[in-house]
Amino acid sequence: MSTGPAGWRRDALGARLFSQTVWRCQVGRGGIRLPVMTKRQSSGFRAAPRSPPLGLGTVCAYALLGLWTLVCLCPLYWVAITSLKSEAAINDGPYYVPFIDFTPSFAAWAFILSDPYDNLLRRFANSAIIALTSTVLTVLLGALAVYGLTRFRYVLPWTGPAPRNRAILIAMLATRLLPPIVVVLPLYLMAQWTGTLDTQMALIAVYTGANLPVAIFLLQPVLGTSATEQEEAALLDGASRLGIFWTILLPMTRAGFAAVGLMVFVLCWNEYLFAAYLAGDQAMTLPPWMAGQLSIKEAQVGGEAAEIAQLSAAAVLMALPVLAFTGLLQRFVGNTAHWQR
Image (cartoon, rainbow, N blue to C red; front, side, top):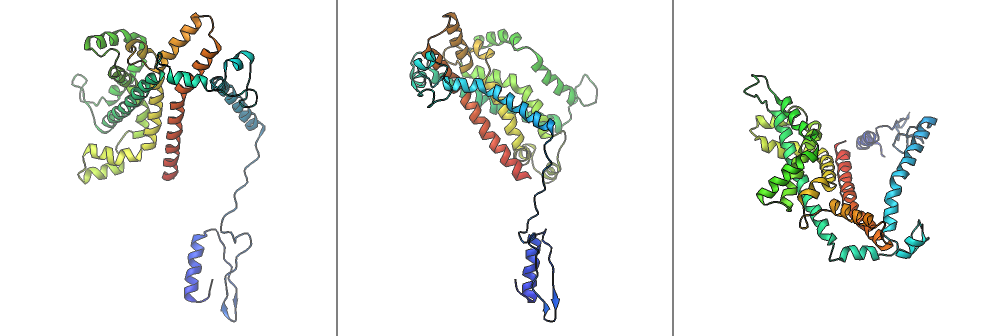
């Protein structure tokens, strides 16, 4: 720091940057001398407040949550290490820690990735294509439906002049209350008549229609119940409705869209009933294939050790995309929320 007007301006700028700094000026015969900061204030940052001590109830709650987390993760860990065990390690076990209790073996992974009979990679590709396409269509159609129901007023001719937006929304959500087993047979007959049985197109259409009420229900609080100030300003400037949706509303709510997309993707990826009835060998996904393999092993009254390792590897392979998709979207949602703050 320096004296004089220029030095005072620099000092004032520093004071604004360190808003919590308290300056003490000393005045003597030589005029204003250098500002002095206390030792505590020299860092320019406020000391972090001390967190209150944890009570007994909080400690017990964290302990129960940690125990429940271990209970939930133990089966996943057991399946993961079983996929890395050899036949001898499975028969002579139990062994718990790789590289310590047993030597990992990738024989099960090599078999399921190269077996020409089960063709697991084609089932995996079918699941990925169907789930991703259905997720995009479901979130897009659900967003447009919510936007239309919350930005426009719909009047039904047989109900009078009062708007019936809420009734339409409830009717769309009520379709999800219908048990899926009730509509499987009609959907099977429709796919058979249209020639789309055992195709990815049929599963994509069914998954989209089945999960559309879920997307509408989850997107309603994301998009709000009325137009925002930015939308009204854009309308006054002559922007179209679709332009407002794509350029204003979608960037503002992308974190919510990512969370809803993750939920819909998990539902599509784990769908079993529709895939079991509408898909054959060509469009079969992983859930019915896994259920079929487990049924075969139960009919044989227990499988061999090699088959147990192969099924464990297939289960891990089925869970990996969901975990990866969750991690990517969680990071995206976290970055978006941090940027908005």
